Every structure is written in structure tokens, then in C-alpha cells.
Length: 234
Image (cartoon, rainbow, N blue to C red; front, side, top):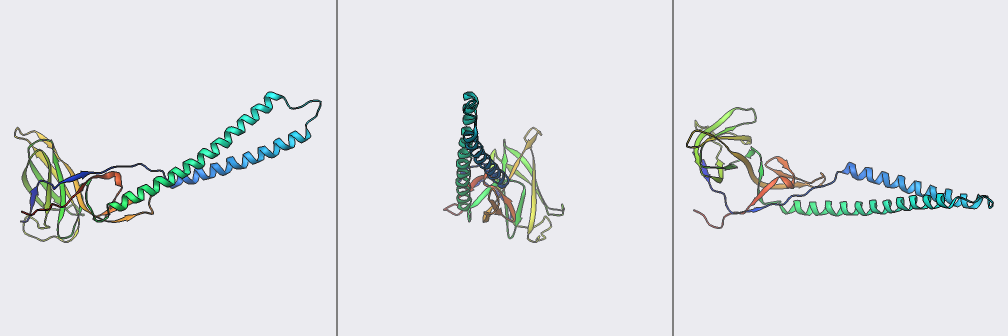
């Protein structure tokens, strides 16, 4: 049985980012167009008002000043909206660049489902030394493998070669790993799982961009680590 539970190789922390949606951008554009239309209408009304006011009863100074202040504020809002739109475009470009960096790299993301095609790798994290029971099920929920392992506190990598307990070689597909643990006193220990795989493509048409890892899609903020291959072999 080519099952191996080993400590992970050297890793680097990944960064995260937040983005705006296309719907928000469309709404902002519509609001800007409406404000611009109202501002031009105001200028037309103001010019007409000045041309046709009664010289004996001119427009009250306070009202005239209030109107100017109000629409001057609207003009400033229009400019702020344009600047925000530029910042959003820059942020989207930066996110796309960041996502492309991950292509071809092995990363770890929170999750329990991994794509098996020759091998599948999960990362396990135990808060303390524990005896863990690892169970792997296929997409139909059928148990294909289970085993007991001793995990030390911290991170460990679990590699499955696709063979069941009876030696059956299972086909390529998506498999789910669950791990339950108990310490030396018999108390339950929570074990978190991460999926490890190679980023094979990025969908830049989505907002935010989606990374494809083993047939599953993830955003860049879901990446926990970038795993560097070890330079030495044992």
C-alpha cells in the first residue's frame, strides 16, 4: 500500500484580496450618467432663470447661493465616481496578475475534496499529537479506503495512491478525505484538512479570477500556502 503520511515541504504564506462585482460597476456607471444629466439640466435652468428674472425682483441671494453650492457638490461627486471607477479597474488588473502567478505552482487550500489521477494529496493539521482515523470516499459516498495513523502536532501530508483496503485500484475522479482523531486520554481531537494540488488554469473572465485545481475552482484568498518542491530526495 503506497500510503504515506509525511511532514510537508517548505511553504510560503499566500496573500488575499477583496474585489468589487460587475453589477456594482454597472450601477455606478448608470448613477454617474444620471448625475451628469441632472447637472446639465441645472445649468440650462440656471441660465434661463438669470435671463428672464424680473430686474425689480431678482432671485433671492441666499436661494441662489444654496443652488450653486448644491450642484457644485454634485459635480464633485461625479468626479469622485470617475476616480473610483479608475481605482476599481486598477484593482481588477492587479488581481488578474496575482492569479496568473499561481499557474503551474502547487498550492494548499482549505477543503477535503481532491482530484485523484495517479495520486492525490491532502494536508492534515492536528493541534496536538493524536491517533487519527483517515477515511476516503468517492463521489458517490462509497468508502474506498480507511486506515489509522499517528499524527504529530502540526502539519502533515497524506498521499493516496488510489488503492483500496482490498488492493482494488480505484479510477481517476474526485475523492473526499475525512480525518478524526483521539489523544492519549481518549479525547476527541479536531483535525482540519487542506487540498494540495497544481493550479492548471485561471479564469480571468470571472470576478474575482478563479483558479482551477484538480477540477475544482478557488479564489486567490482561499489559498493558504504555496508549496515549493524539495531540492533533495530521500
